[in-house]
Length: 401
Image 1 (cartoon, helix red, strand yellow):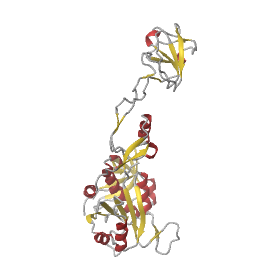
Image 2: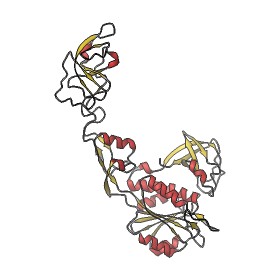
Image 3: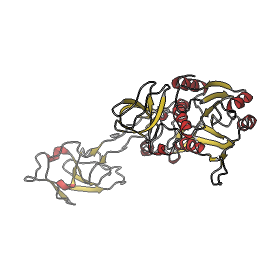
Image 4: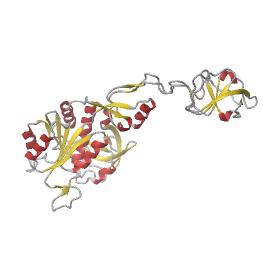
């Protein structure tokens, strides 16, 4: 039985990092990972622009202006956002009416907001002495031409996509998705929508796993159920040879008569990476390499499988994309409710973390209870021999958001 960290390391060593890429429109690139560094092809703004509705002026022309001693200047014209400023030059002792976002004629160095004037259209009186550069957006104020914007292996957020759009970038090169196959094992599993026969349960775990994979940019290539038969398992995996990077199975990995996954892997000729990890729940978790794919076999218990998935999938995906945004985030916090007696094996407990405060889910230590997971956002690590109670300082693992 090996430690979680050692098992994670074996998985990383066995799966090659993604090098295949594709071009995607920005609207289709949310959550994807950049394949290359991106630099600014234009400056933002690409022209001097007004930050206010007001008047573009030379600040030096308004020295001494105040409410008591206003300074008046003729208005040479008006520019709205989107108007072409080509050929317009700001002259000393004149003003130009400009709206927010409008180009500022060359030469002017300041915009006085209209509330500090009499808002004249032919001639305008100024009631303030402005500071040069006020309300004036210089070329490249936001982004300089050639500036580094995003590194390679960056997970694209909505803000990142908006920045790329501001640069006129229509498409982005991203790494291709991790391709995952899901096999739920067990003759007791019934498909959704079908009435349960005595002794049957619904196939729920693969839906939990599939949703997490697709939510964070993965592709579920297939999702199927396999009876308790190693030959049937062998045939399913072989039928998708070369089409997936990772196969995730649930169930069939312990020591019962129907726990056939080790036999199925042997039939495939897969190389075992590990079987049994020092954690609870989900101790029997297993992994193997077959051809260029990883087969990660989770516990059959829904919550135990959930713990296995959280601890191994995200670390593997972070490696695959070379992007730490997918990895579980480690933090420390204080237990404010719930407790767990000391145990003889490293344990992971579902909980909710908010601003350093941790609440253990009601009945969170019972693997048979899964529905409380919906309100949680992390796993609490309970070291061997340590009791957890209110006031305990513990390490948690936040799953991706």
